[in-house]
Image (cartoon, rainbow, N blue to C red; front, side, top):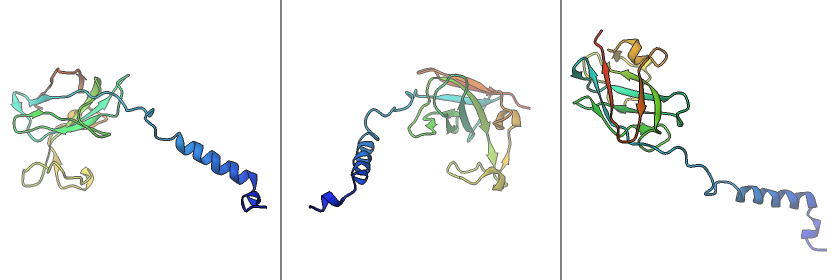
Length: 156
């Protein structure tokens, strides 16, 4: 009688079944996620560029994906929206947008890489909640490949 004959058949089956399960995991049949479209645009506050503002895009309706974020430059323009799951761009569709511009006590914008939660930061929001609060924002845009997004915010 060999050592293999002493192994209970149930254990042999479990090991074999485990290998079968592992072989079926993570193959190339896994979905890649939605196709991402390049998103560029501009944000104005009145007729002035909104500099160093943080935009968050949240998909609505049947739009695929989980959204993304971007910061405006010195001309109020933005490009290379960072998709929340990696990469740049967003799936085409409709998005609810929040626009936040927080300033430190000395008047400087919050650093782009600052991950301090807003509640713990000394920075103050300078835009009204109907632009900056995710629950209250009524801003909506449609993302289409090759079509820039323009947001014109009214001064309060």
